[in-house]
Length: 329
Image 1 (cartoon, rainbow, N blue to C red):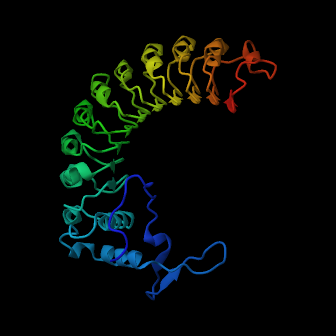
Image 2 (cartoon, one colour):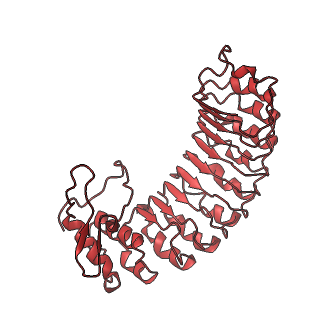
Image 3 (cartoon, rainbow, N blue to C red):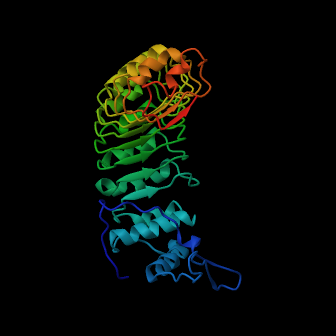
């Protein structure tokens, strides 16, 4: 097939566009090219793109792609997902292909029966997006063999519980974990996160049963972004452990039960650049604590209990909040 036969992880992972965005077939089976915005000339597909497209059209005819270089089998997998041609039976053809990225977010019919084949790529797998799937704790047990996974997306996987979190506690290379909108995860289950010491991004938006669980995040000293939006179980007591996350740069607390007292615990987070407290029960009394956050650039206090009294701290004549780039109040 020609071209390079290896893909370095140090290079940025491309956003898969799919061949269909550039070429498609009409009723007369002729190629229809889109046009370049600058000079209006038709864009010719590469030989690799044409071959990948053709293989994906007949993907059910192939028993294995393991003889191909890893980056080429990755292209075929990505295109088969994008074109919605991939089925459970087709997964067997990708065994032994050393895929690095499995992006099946919102893909139809993904459930536990897919998991053994997906995680068969073992230490080669670096990212997996299973958001919106029907995977359960039983299916997630297979991820234990993928010790090099760096990014895992389990958003809207409503059947994942504390048991499922226990399966990922050994993924020490994990830097990004997303568990958005999962009501089955509790404070007890969050203890599994305490060992993920390389975690940089954690998304727990709309996880409404994690009250008391943030204490397990104390050891995540590298954490830079934490999303707790719409976790209406979060109170001031939960914010105290966050005071130790000194590398935190982004904190989302919208629609939580945090008050002025809880904001006091944020005073030492000097690297915090973005803080969202929309719809929190805070008043102008919290502004003294917020002014101690030297790196704060984006602050959202929209629809909070701020009144005219005390809000003079936002005045241009005041030395407080002079570094703010964006303010909603």
